[in-house]
Image 1 (tube, helix red, strand yellow):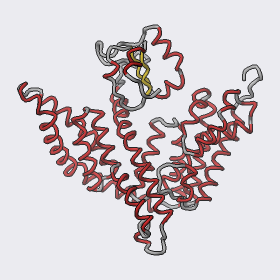
Image 2 (cartoon, helix red, strand yellow):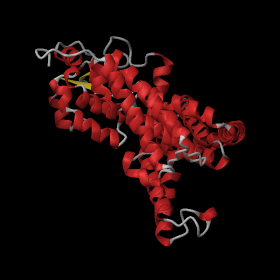
Image 3 (tube, helix red, strand yellow):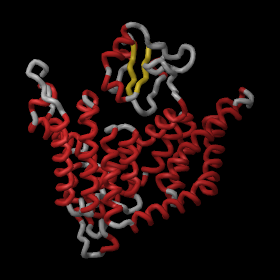
Length: 418
């Protein structure tokens, strides 16, 4: 359950927080709390519940930070903390990217390219209507990313400097990477300011959040982003996308293979998110083939498992067979996470099959020259994909490869086991 009421929290013997992003924890003060990655919440719920029921979970607010379920401290090194802060920004950014991106795609679907190719998407009034709304939502992508990364690091005082840093990154040409760096910079700037302002008299406590943090935080962020971050990162962006533009078909296919395979490595984890975020960031630079390859790769795992469940029924349990239709729908909708229960139960067989199938789909999408302006939607955005039949063929062939590999790798289940 994602939302707990205050009454439910009070009544609970303990709380399990399975998340890969920052979660508001103060409401759990005084309760036994386990913080685990999403994958652990899926793979070993019984173990986690046992720790809660046996009183082995630490009480939030006692001693140091809350501990992880494996007994280590919540912050297991800087890498884990950086990832959680990044995911805090990405999770808040995605609704703007997905909603705005799909509305922009609808605008291209409704427009007439022949009227004015340079103004494609806004030639007809109905297309311009959707394009304006989509552009407005999509324009929030980088400020939201930077703002919520900063907030994850230093709480609410970092939100305004983060937003400003993300906006200046967008305007200054440093794009997604610049906004990402701005988010972390804003967060750590506010942590530094908090230490400096701790030395001020108590009488000035009330003006810190409404005056000192916003003024000094935004000012320092503006100086940092415009003088230090934007110039080199903008140059790097131009070099990167210039290189992508010059890549031949063979190199693009290899890139598609890599990105497609990454979508299946951890199905919603950091590697999957890295490929997806790269795809969405490329949309802002008018590079649409990357997003198509990413979505093709992400659709394959649930589709491959759904097909395998129907084709090799004796290699799946009754419970797994019942989820076949659900995975078919989730795959069609580009919800890669539908394959997680299968991967968690049998990772050595399911993951290789899905990774290879996704890599095939991503590579074929690049080979067919498919382009996608919407960052989500699955088959529902097929009409706005350039070379839609090539995209559909890439996904189907990737799913069939995954299905066949699952049929080879999975062992037959005896009737008593199913």
